[in-house]
Image 1 (cartoon, helix red, strand yellow):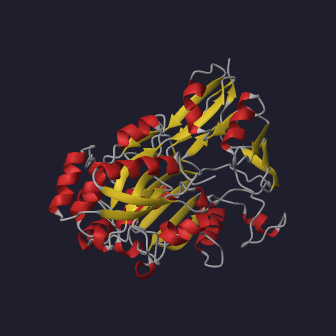
Image 2 (image 1 turned 120 degrees about the vertical axis):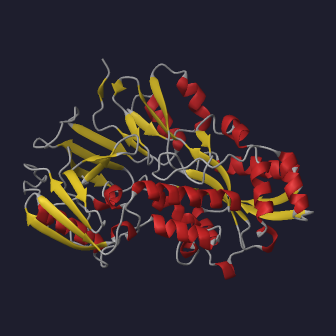
Image 3 (image 1 turned 135 degrees about the horizontal axis):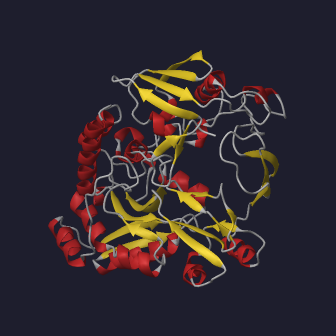
Length: 453
């Protein structure tokens, strides 16, 4: 479990920390911990366990793909068993939200030398949650059993089994056959039929995952922002969401989703092919042909959407050479540094791990351009950099909100992406089960599921 928990609206709630307080200068965070909590191995949860877990996240010898939200932590003090004091190198208004991310889940210090674990290679997790890790068959199945001594509300089911089924059609078949109770991301074209099926319930959960066309902002043909704006006006996003995504998307009206702190509505770019043609004419563009790549099966209807977008672009006089490739090759291609990057248009998704603008606006900063990061549009605007960097350390939330809003307006006008939609997260479950929900970072919530009455 984490020190802080996120609710379905993206708000932070108490977890293993029952409360927290940040000093006025933003450099000290006091965490008051829950008491009477035990780990699954029977050892007590306390401040020393929190210190151990967070220091492990910061340990360079441990592989942590996204460590940066925790790097402002300079030291961790434990004045007593129920108190943790984080001293920061610089203000980090996102740290509390980062403590809701499972990367910072608290583990039993004793467990790193048992069950085949080491501090670096940790394969058998021992936490404080309502379920105990029982067994994992790689690529097939994970089993959990109820923890009798759980400190919080007890779940209904004694055992939970998660089957790993990569094929969407197979997941749907298992659900309809009664072999499983819940699946995520069925074939999206089947959603209308599933919504009419009384034996199942469909949730098209909102998420913060933005789907966009990355535009190579350093390509000579695309450097003029009027060209990039024209691309945005040329695409009929509403029609694509309705006809190809079967409603499982929300057209973007900002560079990021509304569930993130710092969101400000700045758009939209309505479908206006005549305006697109006018902007292209103003930019002196004629007979433009662009290389366009898209993954297949990575996002909802990704290649099909790319085909529709290519058709819309052709209507305003822009031809595309559309192709696809395997995901590993795709990532390497779009993530190449500017001097080796040959992409012009590419379809991609971005999903922040916790609901804060800092996790998303990094996409539009110069420091995120490959090879430093994954800013695949190769976009750079010093004014945006300054606003985002200032917002990332601003402790006054109102000022921070305004800084992010100002940055979003600049980004929207610069149009480094073709802003498409926020992809919804389809969850389908048996009508025999109730209390199924979701979190806004593409997670289902079935912790307190129980039989429907």
